Image 1 (cartoon, helix red, strand yellow):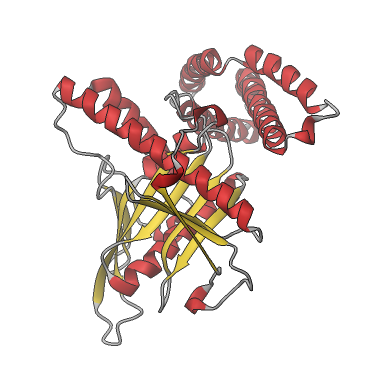
Image 2: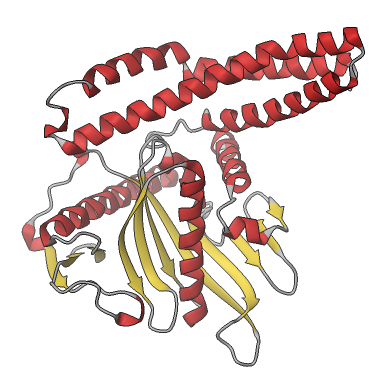
Length: 370
């Protein structure tokens, strides 16, 4: 690469990095880290475990973000010197090293730029995700379980803790539904672009005639509620059932009736939790899930009223949002912004970053245009 071309690309990166730093505010991060470190060192921190986890999680996240920001800035500042030395000495190996570092930085800074687009009211929250099998019978249940694995593998790749609250297993294979929390800052803003209907086309492993089958699964992503946001729910509006936790094939995994199912009678929303040994803990978690779903429903109703006042007649972008074809060819394609890849195996193994990043950019452009 010619030195002039490299300098032009470096100049563009410098401009992008400066814009990122204005949004992410490293100086503000340092102030927040100092405050959180003070809170984390308090001797009574763990008297309130929920608050303690919130403090330590936020501290760890900010420290990691600041390290990433500072490392990218340092590498970017060193890059012009690397190219100038390579040019002066006519060193092909140093020049190749500079070319690779420039490409790596363009990719890394591009990824970080996506993070600055998460500026919605709830984007910095943790996420509560529910996956449900839809049309397609046993194939749909199997597909729902494949999606569950895709998202948990994505979380593992990013070092994001997650906790499965409830899994309802299908009789033959797969799952009817599953609910889990992703306990990382900005998990909601990041994963909310995954909400909608996911369609799978493949040769069914459950069809003894080897026919092609199309199946569907729905993904719901809502922000975890803060303690200050909780709704007052009258006891008369709730029906609470307890039952024994079950595993694949209906086998019992617990000897006591510790699993809890809560039905909100006015809305018909049903939530359940069976991941804890204690019925009391499962009830508290199920209530937190119900609070989140009711608050999300209220937000959607308010948004619909505003859209109606604005004359917004566009449909929800979440429905029929992505197609995964495994036969007769291999392709995953997002139907909203036309991004696609032929590497279906990697996608189903959790490598969905390009789709998420493209989705965040597409959402920002769509909201800016409206």
